[in-house]
Length: 200
Image (cartoon, rainbow, N blue to C red; front, side, top):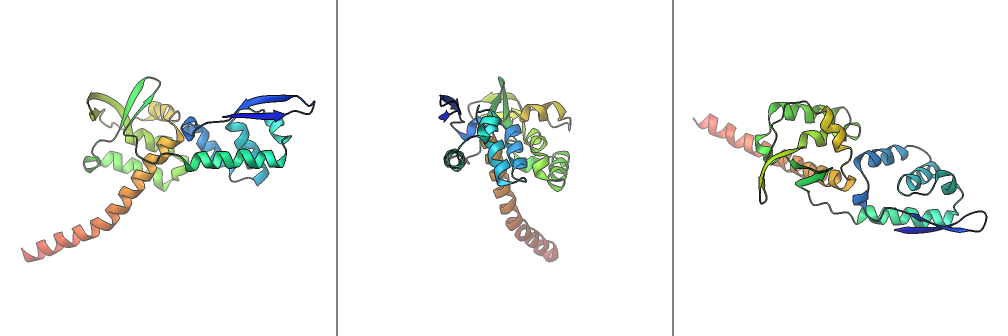
């Protein structure tokens, strides 16, 4: 999206603003989350500077009405995002697949996921994505096999910072819904197993 800004000298210059939430990387999104802890003025300045090529000093010179229009457009883009899970993503030419079978998640994967969530998910999103998304070894149509989990995610974590915020949010949305379903189903399953055990 293009934004026209009138500079002090009276000249009008055109700048670029993101055109879709898909343009925002995980790394940039984490910065945006950090900006929310400051004042509203600081948040608006940093957000516009991060999501456009408007220099920060020029952002500070924008009329409040212009800032309001830009911020509302950014909010619209975030609302328009697709929350459907992207099972396969590509980062710099490498295909990564979302864990294809969460029923067979290993103890090591589960322990790492649990640790990242307990230690503040917002501080460990890249690590969490590095556990859930792994390089695809083999693929045929929509079926794929990912690399086995070995706990060594340092390099992949850096790659995951290049994921789009939309991809991360859709994975979190899926993961949250899965967790919610499991928390409802698991007690029922355990009660059934307990009844069966008592009957035997």
